[in-house]
Length: 181
Image (cartoon, rainbow, N blue to C red; front, side, top):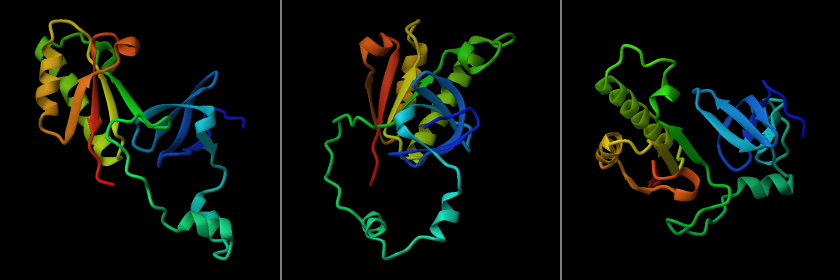
């Protein structure tokens, strides 16, 4: 499949659709209608050339392959912390220079407020879109942002813990969002 910037795509194992914004070898960056940007491998995406609602007009309900898709399938109950290969994990870098072009004129309180607002917005997005994992990259520093993040996370139906040291170093918190399927 040949993807180009601007193509409309859908994620194979998730309810995410958007437009290709950047391609880096096998990685493809996709921005959805709400402005969230995700990173996927090419093999996880499908190019949408015709709006899916247009295709459904021509579907034949007697088609056995379509019937199999329509009929609800029983899902095996997953253990809470078994990582699925195709699981979507949203990563959010909360370093101030990643959130705004310049911190000029902002004091530490303004920067901390911006970081916490961003974390809250991304967490609520994950809850609404049923994204079960969120990694908040906060850095090490004096630990003020990390402490405030943990205080914020205590108000949500989540469990949080240190993210993978190999992947993120010491400055990241992984958040598991409880979902009712």
